[in-house]
Length: 178
Image 1 (tube, one colour):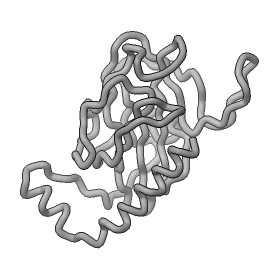
Image 2 (cartoon, one colour):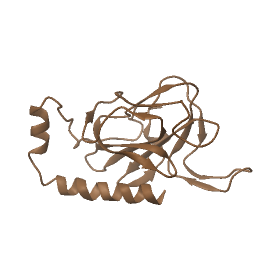
Image 3 (cartoon, helix red, strand yellow):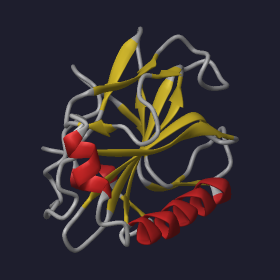
């Protein structure tokens, strides 16, 4: 989790540096990859779900106690995956990272902006990522595949989802549509 915290803080520093480049959104819009405004309010309960169909949250946000595992502070939620699934962006934004992290395997991060609070979604334990860093996505766009079991260790496939508000973990269930 420390690797993830460090990477998010690094990306936030880069984003602040990029804010000085006033031509970036216009250049992207002219190229037809049109960014969405990152300066818009994003409220709890307004983000879309990353998967279609019924979902079961296996591990909730926060401190998780288990008889079989040590206590764990989950910075997101873990959703059970049955079969191959397409992971969708929870909101429009810009892909800011894709790579591997020790605790979460293949990881994707999307910056959704936010008028007063910066919102980032983090998707972990992915099998394959379908978008590139710098790419703009819309809400509901396919961004990754999960369910083949290659994205994580262990027998049960799970999507790890985090919502970060100003780089700090926030309960995804509070942000997702009810």
